[in-house]
Length: 552
Image 1 (cartoon, rainbow, N blue to C red):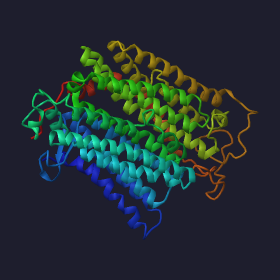
Image 2 (cartoon, rainbow, N blue to C red):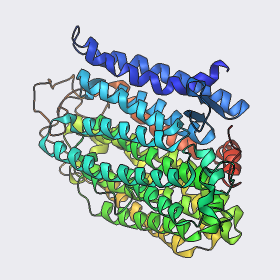
Image 3 (cartoon, rainbow, N blue to C red):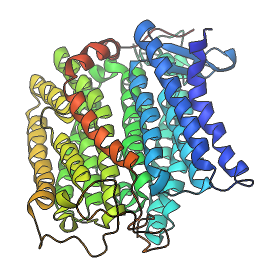
Image 4 (cartoon, rainbow, N blue to C red):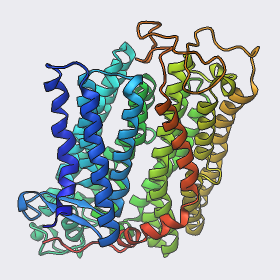
């Protein structure tokens, strides 16, 4: 085993073990949590960079915990698909930590939950078997419930409880589906499962059950397992109508937490759905049961429309962005459905475009939405503005935040040259080549609806001047360089904000540069469509090739 083979285990173990330190060492020193989290996440970022070099240069990295071979042992896998997500987790969790330095919350318990969440997210992305995916989804959920409630607001506690209840139902459905698969095949390793479902009797432990079946794709127990697992993961990804936990959680959580979970938690839920669809069930399953792929494409399309319509009618900016996420993740899920369905009608090229669009948008949405929530958080902390009307004249008062929100919003619409355009374009091409015209119409209509609520925000920020005066509660924030910038007029005891932050507290220059940097990344990635295609081609080939080789 090379040194690189140990990195997947370190990426999971390091933040989970470090999560105990803020609470333990906090008995000796107050507010040590941020420093511990910063060192841990910096190391995580370096490890993610090292494994990226290995995977891009030499291919998939596998680690068998304790040397035990699957299916009895636990396998961790870093391929190009999981590499996308672990890179996003490592980089964005460190970036949000910089923002939280002043924005808070600052308690040691907060940073323990923060590191636990990172470990859980890494586990979901890296695990090679379904039961451990369930375990890591639960770790992620528990940490997220605690972080949402960390603002100590009553409505945040209610939102966290709502998330807990709905998330538990989703996890339970996922576990039932996993149980069905285990009963049907006797294994939970993803690659072994793909072979077992294809009818490889040397892998299937209960082969006598399937007399008369060439493969297990149409076996009732397998069909039921897909239904339970898909609905469970669609709940985790906040797809309409299973999204109801998300808007309240996003709107009431501290700004740092909202940015973190909007960029990573639902992203990992969508990632898990793609992983299960193309690594466990594979395109062969969807060719045998095309209705399953159409179900995914339809529910994704419904989520695109519903999320876009609900976003248009919101006045609270965080709720607007939350419903926008329902639509954007709907696009990713619809693209997965398209990619799974297209081979069954002989449209392999369309499948490639749809899958490429889904992967690009998975990362692009994390960058855009995470950046947007950080910018909105910066605005709320520095001016107290939370609604669209309160954003009037923001371009004069907070030019960098306003400019960043404008760029990130344009990216969500899908205007070139942004990464939002690249992902949406590839998905749309896949839909056209599949001749699934209702999906094409949904993408066009949702683009217009997204333009409607983003344009309303831009109009308020740049062209609405209510007397040209800032809000009375506007405190001194120098970092954004806008008019009325003061030296730091607010103190932490002043005017407690309803979001767990403090109106008038300083937003650091580093936090402002971070938001501006994410806006620039959104543009830079918009020129990388060809690079995405070249880098992701091997994993797309693998996903569309059917069951992989057994690992033992």
